[in-house]
Length: 213
Image 1 (tube, rainbow, N blue to C red):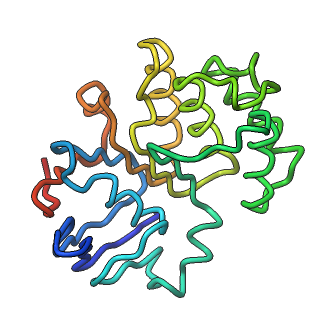
Image 2: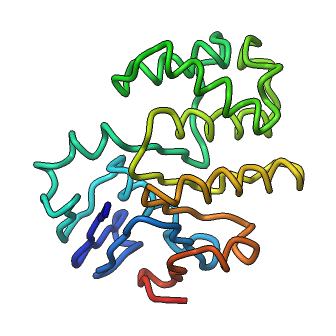
């Protein structure tokens, strides 16, 4: 079973403590992060995705501590942040294949998978358009689609259903549940109540602490 274990993790920005003494294990299945805006959910996800390092504490991936396991973790990571600067001059397909190369994936296999994912979430007809022409919802779907490339064992998803219409959001939710069968999926979403019955764990982030909801 996939496991990402935090022990005593803390993060501050200047004098502001965002996370304090976080000890939690993310295992195969869906973990939902809840809590008020600004509570530290996105910071926690960035640390999960090793996009940011904690000030204190230890993190282990499948029993091997970081930084030793950081390369292995990133090779099997899918990360969809809430905000990202996309290359406006590339088409969606070119961007996805670029990300596939960075992940060390076979281009042909990644292209086929990208086609299937975008078909499922209503983006396939636009994959050869330049990203500069994309709406907010289209960009959100593209960021989500690239996160699923390969067979990630760890998915960190920050509001992947934001700016999506109801049916598309539900389809994204269904794909996330499929991924959670074999991967550790950690996410924030406004569909928390809808996905809660399928979640392996629901955690609340508030005042720097992470507790079971």
